[in-house]
Length: 468
Image (cartoon, rainbow, N blue to C red; front, side):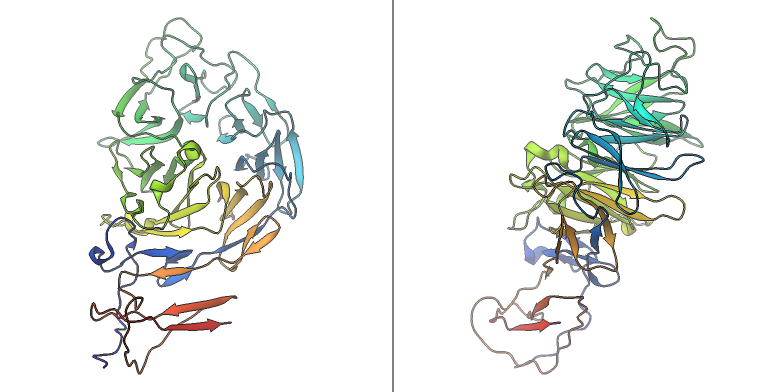
């Protein structure tokens, strides 16, 4: 018989998913699964997406890079890379090709440098490519590199990863680079090449110091300095040159260059080779892991299910106070699984809580980028599955339930599984005179289960089905 009504004061999934611990050890607020769901005041279905390009740009390739360029004195331009092309895609999805001679089907990384008012593209094979809003082409000059990952500015110059180390430019120019220099080329202190560099700020007593975070697969460094040399092609450094590279952690790094991302007022995040998610708080150099709860001991796919042969395809981005992580699982070579980290707790004074939502398994985005200057506040994504083709999407559309996947629209299967035992085994009966469901759906059907929240007795599960 009924001992009491089902409590209306159930803990909300504010602590997110925990795939690591047994269900009976989960804390109030932790859940076993929030598939295609997130908590934002209440449990909600993830936003949908729509097509930006009305048809595929190429049926044989995936999107390999994307970026929004905001030039001074000109209109913003959206750049995407796929196959051998780097193109501009306007808001109607129309394409203007900048080049069709790039090395084919390589990851492309874009960087805007305000000093030159240019955006640069690198793919690990070709020399630097530039676009300034009107003209484009390969950068010419002295020792122009073929950077292996995204280039990054520091103070008045650019830096790039090559097989020799990290090269730098002369001040305020992209046309003169160091070349395996005894002093200007920064080298790792451990075996292996650098995998990524990323802008980084150190906090002193009353000063902020501009720097770069440099990563190998299993180590990370901090590059700092106030004077990076007068002539980077000289045999010796100029008087006053004081740049340095310092090893911070010999065991933590990344093999996923697209996963390195900064979150304002929070810090820098990246996916480690372990795999886990590492967080370096803003202004600091030491970090900590925040992805432990995503190591799965259940059938739900977690970080330990990453395809290590394609871990370089994992990405992260920050949008709408959430850190979005996408990665490939099984034998897939494109991201098929996402988890979202709630930034509201990490941005609070009491930042001990880490709340992940997911898995999100409806999208197969290969690259994701923000468009967020002026009046814009949008997220765009490029298709990562080459079998689907080179489509560009308007991602994170709060007014949509469907998700564009090529020319098709998919509706996500949403599963909320809390820490309470379901009526899934055994037999019995229970009289429940009053139960209320609040259901908000924009299409499809919904199935809800009733769990016993008062005791450990397990009953047969009755199901209530709702169809819109």
